[in-house]
Image (cartoon, rainbow, N blue to C red):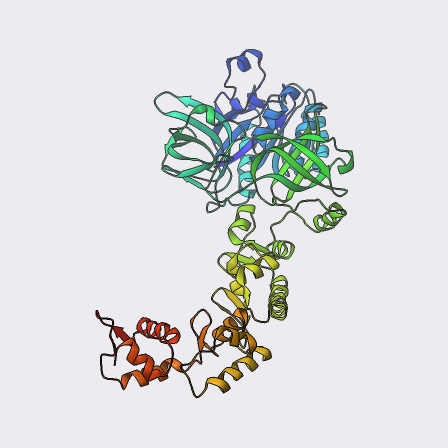
Length: 584
């Protein structure tokens, strides 16, 4: 199947043409049939000579219903531009063509209707000249009469050739179904319809409603009036949703593959049309079937920032148009450049941003996104529509290679600076380093640390950071000189202070393995434990605290915490009567 939308001035025979081609009535409302004027979107389909199927989205031609027209054209890849032979090119012909051009529609046919009422040549020549200057370019043309049927076979053949030119569908892409109708079927519940441009839908699928926190489940699917277990793009599809009130969904909403789209109310776009500086402060953005008011901030000659009245699921490269509803004027087509742009708060930020946007063309570019963002999660890029085929640096974080090298250099600099300012600290806390580098995730710090740096106990330090500052090393040597022949005697607190070992210095010496801490202000030389076990093993077993104290030639102040430490390490075992034995 392929899907094509009509376009053209009111009363130029669009709906009559669809009836003649399909045998179906595209005008759904009684008022439309009574007035002979399409007001809302109509839908019909037919089989082509090749055996393929074409589905039509018939749009209104009256200027009052341009928003409805845009809702039908927005998600559709091809257009049927209809011009009446007896009236020729008209104002809505021009506005509809401007809308197609703004949306970047590149595939289409020109159909001159009412060929039985006037010579189609002049209308055909004029319309071709107008269309040739737009995204449609040089299009095939067919003259027909919906009343007599003349030219319909040629039109069917032309539609077949158009179908063969269309890009291949992408069934493995995520689903973004812009809703153009929502209604209730008795016994089935809520049904929504739209043009499935990419991906596939299956009965039982869970989908996300754009802008909502909850999800819906597909109860049933129809395409071309038939129930289907699965529908693959490109197709017109009706989706029956389980347990979903009709009021919850309407035209302009979208059903999405969960977690695959970035919802944004702020975006930077390139404008083709009116000069950016001449745009009014507020316009309406038409994208898919949605029409959302947008505040406009010009950034460069052809780039603007849009602040939307509600968030939409947009991707880099999406096409949309800006329209001034007050003047019934298409201000221009836009191509989405960035769906997660940086704030413009500092002086000169807008000018700098204009330079960045001038280099963007709206095509997803992984290397460029990494260069501009430095660090970004792969999942975030995919939700923006940017392929994220790169090796993560940590978790699912991707990094610009040059930015990553600069961060590694800064890690070395920041750790060295911290060591200079805090010579007794065991290293720089990982979280402090993360904040210093303005990194969003602790895992990034851990990935940046490479030898000769290391992470130990939540701190980053040089591998040789155990080397003590000279004043502390000198104080430790004095302890060894004074107590080397009395290994189980501990300096008193005031003596520790005299030789330069305050709490911070003791902590540094203990971390470096130069001293052994038994309790506050009770320290021994590091080989005291092994020596103590040898001495205690020579005592009659079991032994008492008093016997241990005498054998070790020390005080109760040292003996009690020393024995408790040996108990914890399993070198000795305390018995119920408080005696101990050495565990061999």
